[in-house]
Image 1 (cartoon, rainbow, N blue to C red):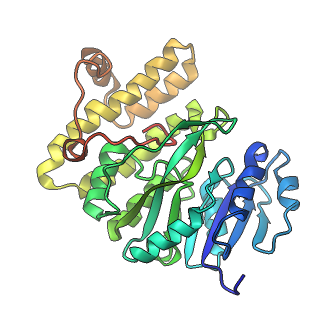
Image 2 (tube, rainbow, N blue to C red):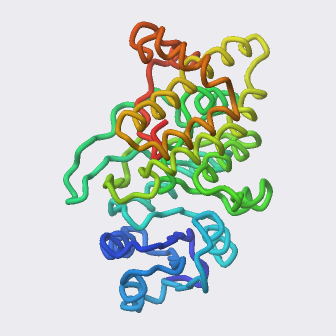
Length: 328
């Protein structure tokens, strides 16, 4: 290994013991070996610390929070100690294919104008079986700021998750760190900031296995309620970036598509007897629109089965098959 790594892999850990070893091993077995791995334990309560302690590879740097700080604060702390010009975000549940870093470095060398990049991915279950393979995406290799705003306003976080993202450290220094007062949408908000100033690169090759399992924080009902509130300001920012001629259509789409998804979530938990979650989601929806009017729209459209608005992006490119970690 040379004195300066080409890329820093940043791995925040919180109670990740079940899959952590496989995740770390997939990084250490990369075909491109000139990297550093920053592992930052956010005061795990399980055996994560013991798993991390077993690794003596000199490329690994280990840190631990004295108390639980949350994902985005932990990411910010880890990024500050990195030494490479590129920051590869990573997850304790997922697996890198052996050529992941090599392909991503080659891609960023080919498209130096992008501020960040993300790759496609296959999805595996808790046993490692592939349950979803990346389809052909219509997204171009380089996504302009205008197109990124279109994609994210209509279809949510452009990357779908956090484990397929590489950021330039110089870009983070320019746009600022992750907002650590956010619990769920901090990554989405960051991509919006980056895409306002820089193009985003999309590597169509699936280079990671993204794991889907019931224990994930992002799949908990309370997380989605938080997401409703946090994402509202992000979508408001994106709306301002759309062409003026599209504003009215976009506002209608917001109300008749995304807001009705929130109503669906509320009713589903009400029917399941999860009254606390249903009421919390009602309160979150009330902060952005009139829940009674939205309920009426939800009923009239039969939960969007009778009528569904088509996004401008979908009209131009076809329906994207995003698999977001927050269910966009």
